[in-house]
Image (cartoon, rainbow, N blue to C red):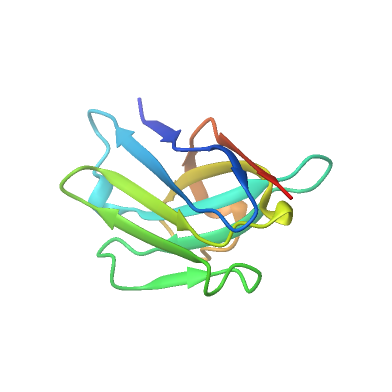
Length: 125
């Protein structure tokens, strides 16, 4: 069984920063074989793509709305993917989910095989 566990969310003021982490585990799960992605879902909205990183960490992709403020990274030795979020804005308030994909089409939710339970990020103005 594969588990993805997010952490690092919280309540911050606008302009602040957070670093989200997602730890992966599973007896048959080879973390370094998967593209890892972050999505977010605000109240009343669809879950949307935020960022993704390939198996090596050498290729990344971001939603236009977060470019320049969000940075995705991974540590394959620790089976962990990170999302550094800077200059947080109220519009970033959402539940943030990490996910693992064994195929391409990084921005598409259905491409992801495994999902975490999410971590809440709330930004106050």
